[in-house]
Amino acid sequence: MLNAKSAPTEARDNLISQKVATLPPSGIRKFFDLLSSVEDVISLGIGEPDFVTPWHIREAGTYSLEKGYTMYTSNSGMPELRQELANYLELRYGVSYHPEYEILITTGSSEGLDLALRAIINPGDEVIIPDPCYVA
Image (tube, helix red, strand yellow):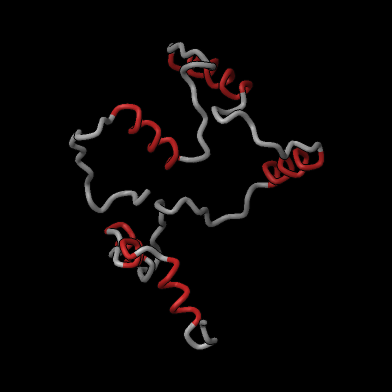
């Protein structure tokens, strides 16, 4: 049984895998930590803006909540969004993509990079990754 004094340490030791517990900080994490002590640096790395979300975006979010648009979409993205993206790419760049079979909307860059690499890398392939790099 865990006592109050030892609970956080013992619980943490039992819940975190040995591999994760011994991982050193990534090079990019060390870099961000170093820059956090420097004045007048604009970080473009974490993806966290230093301004309040613009009103029109907040208003659209409120509208969507009030209309009940709170359900999950297709796991490949909303069909309307994929169609509009296909239209934009053709109009802007003159390239054609089928919205149902060739366009995938992800929840963020980490998911997109993961899926793209899984699509082209086979077990045993050599992949060169610069360090420091994006940790995801």
